[in-house]
Length: 568
Ligand SMILES: *[C@@H]1O[C@H](CO)[C@@H](O)[C@H](O)[C@H]1NC(C)=O
Ligand SMILES: *[C@@H]1O[C@H](CO)[C@@H](O)[C@H](O)[C@H]1NC(C)=O
Ligand SMILES: *[C@@H]1O[C@H](CO)[C@@H](O)[C@H](O)[C@H]1NC(C)=O
Ligand SMILES: *[C@@H]1O[C@H](CO)[C@@H](O)[C@H](O)[C@H]1NC(C)=O
Ligand SMILES: *[C@@H]1O[C@H](CO)[C@@H](O)[C@H](O)[C@H]1NC(C)=O
Ligand SMILES: *[C@@H]1O[C@H](CO)[C@@H](O)[C@H](O)[C@H]1NC(C)=O
Ligand SMILES: *[C@@H]1O[C@H](CO)[C@@H](O)[C@H](O)[C@H]1NC(C)=O
Ligand SMILES: *[C@@H]1O[C@H](CO)[C@@H](O)[C@H](O)[C@H]1NC(C)=O
Ligand SMILES: *[C@@H]1O[C@H](CO)[C@@H](O)[C@H](O)[C@H]1NC(C)=O
Ligand SMILES: *[C@@H]1O[C@H](CO)[C@@H](O)[C@H](O)[C@H]1NC(C)=O
Ligand SMILES: CC(=O)N[C@H]1CO[C@H](CO)[C@@H](O)[C@@H]1O
Ligand SMILES: [Ca+2]
Ligand SMILES: [Ca+2]
Image (tube, rainbow, N blue to C red; front, top):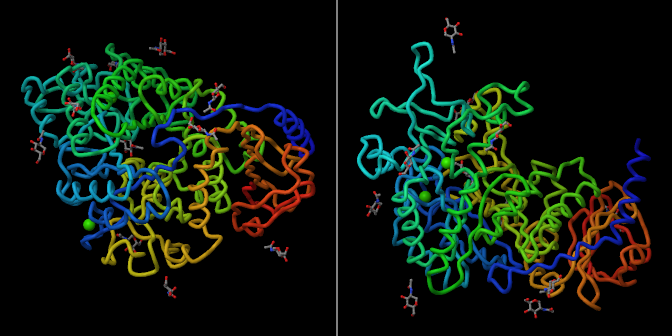
């Protein structure tokens, strides 16, 4: 069995050597090309006033950290007025700052400071739904025109004299996606919690409102938007039951994965709406505006966003498809699969983490933290990191009575651990002082991870082989012309190494080498990947046990188990 795997890997390795993906990252000279973009989860980055929740003034006070890292842009998770049922993804006013985060003047100061530091600012745009406390929804309930059609309302189905939802559609957060409203005497549709009614994008008045939201923030100096849950915008107008999925028999009938969502997800008209927003952004003056889109979907629907106005349709492959069991072959497959699917001329991107997924060190394990960061850096295109990725923060397990995320609460005490996103949202670990330097308050909205005394930014700044020191080198490497314009080869060297080789004309290549095995293996890597006999270590993780700057003999080279190095 083991032998077979090794043989297969060897054959793949040989194939890999000859098969160059030859994918060069275009996207012309957009400012986001070949950069890292940094997501700030607003509630957890920095608390300026001691109430235990992160805020705008906190972010402004820490923008220098992002300059020090070298990222091109900061994307802020929602800062808008919200009852915080889904921690800001339930918006009650799209053009107001929630008081917990500050004021519009605080926002203006944040933008001014970012501009002075040459940092771009990207806002979260959450267009699928609003909060049920939004004045539009309140008026919709009262059937006030034109608000009456802003949301998706349907009459009940009466079955044997009992009121039932219009169809079998399920919420992403468990159970029926329909909620009865006793005042309007109709059900409304909600893809997420019942406190987040979906908009009706067939209403042109609603479409116009949402464009005005974009214009409002563009006029205040933002450089683009990250559009959340974009593949959920439109629902099929026939409202037919969705078919059962192949895993339906293993799942409770309330689990959204028990249905095949072909009437509520990935509808064609989503792309038309995106293009209308693209036109709004393109008709503003000044810096070119970026659109990043979030959709957990198939490669076909992901790639389609490239042709409909999204500059960065999030590529979740590193999060979703790299497993502990992947090995070098699995990693190669994931990377090549994505690059081969990309439409010609499209700019690749690699999402390393976000507030909806477990952190790398917890989803996989600690040795993968640097390896995933290195893969995202060396591959062509944009890398998107989540606050804490640069210092290797890991999830903080939560007890049931500490759970705040509605996705966790709705799943109940037995299953919340699989659904809750709280563990990846704990406060940023700045230093070893009270609440990790996040807040002067000992009590923070989510608890600080108890590892903060050893895992924090201040200490990692002093350590030459820390996650942070490595991340800084990775971010600056993105600007290397070979990474910008070179071709990409993914290769399995011998059986132990995943190699990513970036090559430009006659220059010496840039090589990422990851030992997926637990022991050191020496090999003539130079011959195998057609690299020079002598190369220099540009960066290394701590497992590699090798000095940055060392010159190595590539004809007989190896790195310690789980080590990863970038050679130039
Ligand atoms: C949102 O808040 C702003 C600022 O407070 C206010 O001017 C505006 O009317 C509000 N919008 C709605 C739809 O309530
Ligand atoms: C309606 O009630 C009848 C009699 O109780 C029952 O046989 C039938 O299955 C019910 N129909 C539905 C759709 O529940
Ligand atoms: C959505 O809006 C359109 C156009 O205003 C309207 O015809 C339709 O009935 C609305 N759909 C729902 C489900 O409310
Ligand atoms: C949805 O799936 C069902 C069953 O597989 C199929 O009959 C139907 O045509 C599909 N509808 C769409 C819009 O793809
Ligand atoms: C963009 O600049 C042009 C020329 O200066 C000006 O006419 C136009 O009004 C500006 N558009 C916007 C949206 O500011
Ligand atoms: C959670 O429950 C434990 C006991 O099971 C208790 O010690 C702790 O104080 C509770 N925490 C909260 C936040 O209620
Ligand atoms: C806390 O960090 C400071 C500097 O970052 C260091 O001097 C000090 O020893 C640390 N204290 C503890 C208890 O780790
Ligand atoms: C790399 O590509 C950029 C943008 O296409 C171009 O301006 C630059 O000259 C290229 N550099 C090299 C070394 O080919
Ligand atoms: C990218 O590759 C295409 C063809 O594969 C080539 O025409 C183009 O010049 C390349 N662009 C850069 C920036 O190297
Ligand atoms: C690191 O390398 C040194 C010298 O090559 C060796 O003595 C040491 O055991 C290695 N450490 C680990 C953790 O592999
Ligand atoms: C990445 C992202 O934006 N995720 C959000 C998608 O929308 C749902 C519902 O608003 C949120 O819960 C997610 O956090
Ligand atoms: Ca605060
Ligand atoms: Ca929707």
